[in-house]
Each structure stands twice: as C-alpha cells, then as structure tokens.
Length: 127
Image 1: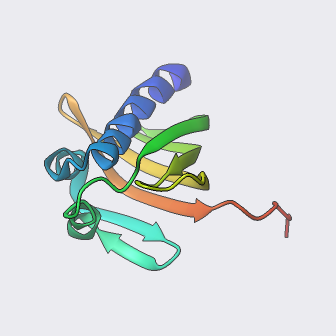
Image 2: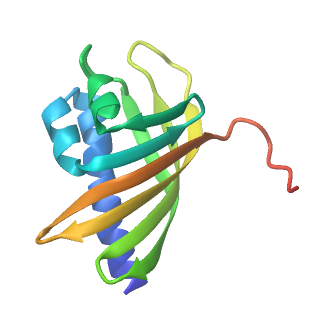
C-alpha cells in the first residue's frame, strides 16, 4: 500500500509542479481543494492565493522532487513528504525546501487539502 500510495501522490504532486512551470492557473486550481490551506515562511495562503501567483506566468523554471515518503492516514487520505529543488524563471540558483502535502481521494481524482513548505538551505540542527 505505501508504495502504491507514494506513486499515486507523487504523480499528483508532479501535476502541481507542472502547473507552476507552465503557468497553468486552471490546472493548479483543479488540483487544490476549495478549502486548501498552504503554510509558507510568510504565512497562510488559500487556494485563491496559490492560484493567483500564476497570474504573471510560471513561477518555477525547473524542478526535481527527491527523498519522497508517503504516509497513509486513512482510506483515501495520505500525506506526501519530500525535498523539492527548483529554479525560478530567469534564475540560475537552485532553491530547496521540504514539503509536506496532504491529499484526499474524491471519486477517481485526488485533491490537495494542505501543503507546508519549509526552506532547507540551513544545515539541520536537532532541537
């Protein structure tokens, strides 16, 4: 189950990143629950704010997702965690962040309920 869930959720997450690289606001919106909550270094964002970032076009030029793990939480509900590395349009430097993304199956589709991005350029120091 975890391997199948990992493959499924990673495919959905790649669809979100594909929307960010193409600037496809409609695709981005279709993947997010109407009640989507994003938690970012600068605070909370809902689905409207997540989609609005694409009004000026793509926000990501290239990306790769690594160290992915999936955690089944309940039937049709799973948490995907991974490290994302990406570049911005016109930028050459790679940025990195840890992402946790909560997905729920609705019929044949999956929707993103929650996502948290944590920049990871600093070395890890356990508390």
